[in-house]
Length: 241
Ligand code: ATP
Ligand code: MG
Image (cartoon, rainbow, N blue to C red; front, side, top):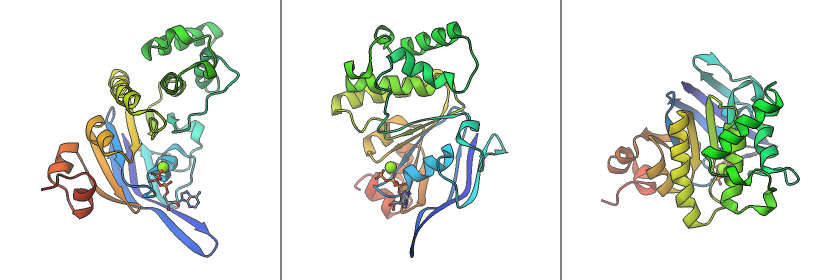
């Protein structure tokens, strides 16, 4: 179980302070798929980066299974993150790119790494592309490699920051379903960041709506849709009635 307790992140750029995340309280149960949604600049990426340890919380606490991980290094967190710009290593093959996720954190033998890479690639239906380089792949295939590199370690928590926004509409729809399938097959605790209402409504078990660094509502998508807690939620995802 992942918990954020009064998580706050302030960016101090000279004489003005930006409160990117303001007293955020959020719990994600084991195996849950939570979608964090809100308009541009509302603090989604900052929240995710604090959870991953890529950004230091200004105050508050992050716990994983009741262990305080607020000040742990990213590598000590057993989390994997996929970004919008997933930057594969251009001169490595798909096999090497996916395997890299494992090499840096484990001491498995070469054979074991290859087995895991092949299983992960099968899962993502890119098993026949292992010897290709990223430049030979389509956008969707590259995105699958990035997902593979992240999940191969079977992390406890999977964090995704707008992973589909560079793909065309049709592929986005396909990948949406595939990510959901992958998440439920692996039963992995997941936070998925998006500003896309359709993704929010269709992908998660629950959604958390953020505006100006503050949490507006957390709940099942249809509950937030039909019973928005305030005007902002109503306007952003709610039914027009
Ligand atoms: P988007 O949907 O556009 O990706 P977001 O919800 O991910 O937006 P954040 O990137 O978390 O938003 O930014 C939240 C606020 O914090 C914004 O006002 C942004 O300008 C500010 N911010 C983010 N990173 C920094 C930084 N490194 N230094 C200063 N301000 C920052
Ligand atoms: Mg962002």
